[in-house]
Image (tube, rainbow over all chains, first blue to last red; front, side, top):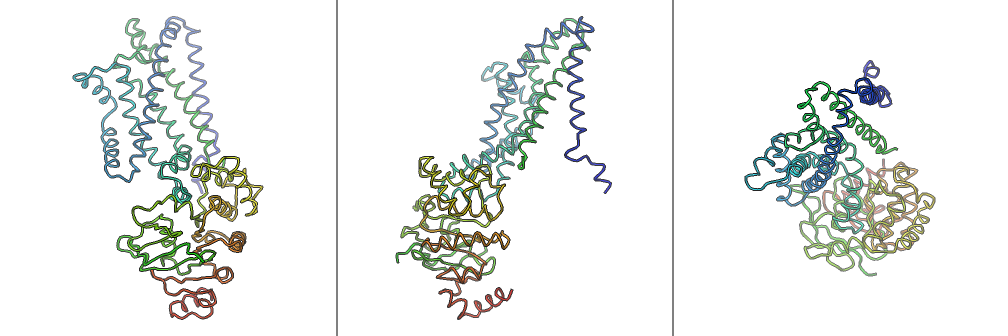
Length: 250
Length: 245
């Protein structure tokens, strides 16, 4: 009985108000700091937009390819053919077992012995491969959550397996996996800061460039942190709204 | 009457478990063929072998005089000719009622969408759900969902309808609406194979009844023969138990 009081229910609003406080707090800071102290905050804010754009570019490209990889690997792990099934499982196990930072180094520096990959391409490739493995697990769980009877009903009506997957299984899976994939997108947005070590001029890298010439380390990284925070809070709200919409009784 | 489904000496094993042992039967055009028996006696497996949702271990099944079993069989063609109704309805939850019904005609037969919808409305009227065409399955009661599922199967103009315990998940009132639709179909001359626990309905609607137990056909005959004058002890015991309940 006490549990019911202590554990917040679904309609508890405290989570949303916490989100509102942090989101609008961060935005106010981003506006107030340069107003109150234009030197150095206004200079920082004028310096970093390129980085925000680059961070977005890398994130959006990576999530796009990661979704394709994730869907293919997720479907592959449901395959009736052992060889496809096993290769996809190996992919997931291997990639998930190596830190993203090591994968970035590997593709950019180690593979340079054979092929020189452009820094942004290397960043996108490494992050797509890595997040593809995680997203494939989400797809797999989503595909497995569709009752067996759905496939059987589609086959019994004369659809091919391919038509059944495309028309019946995938549309239902996408409703289920959209919120967790939104969370992966946010995680990827944050992890994209790792690409700054490959000389990709993302948000963090631009901050470092500014700080190392002006020595305003505290001020610069405060702004950088606030910008990341605003971006992730913004997208997490979108994911929460999506989750609400996807509820079956909505 | 020409033969619709012929099952010859079919056996089916799941690993060590025997689901069907040397089952033979013939369903003729217009037959309302009931398969009765206790749970786990192989009734549903037999139905699922007829449209190849399961592969037989040995034996042959013919639908419309075409061999279903064996590697060369045109499985999709067979499935187009046999409509199936499941215990758990298995409507597609992301599609409206009308789209559930028109999906297979459009995808499998390339029927013109307008024509498919017109046909779907005729079928919906027949099962008494014309006002629900825009509804999603979750907005319907179990009985309504099962009636939509029947309409969905009928949309492919099947030669044979397979019913796999169509009312087992329904309360008595909803059971009646579904049985009424099935009676209407039977009166219309549809060939039906029905796995069911509804003995009263079997007595009233069937023209042939087969009793299965422990993966085998024990006894086969007209409803009068099976229900009023069973020959085998196992049939007598089963009927005694279910009819007493």
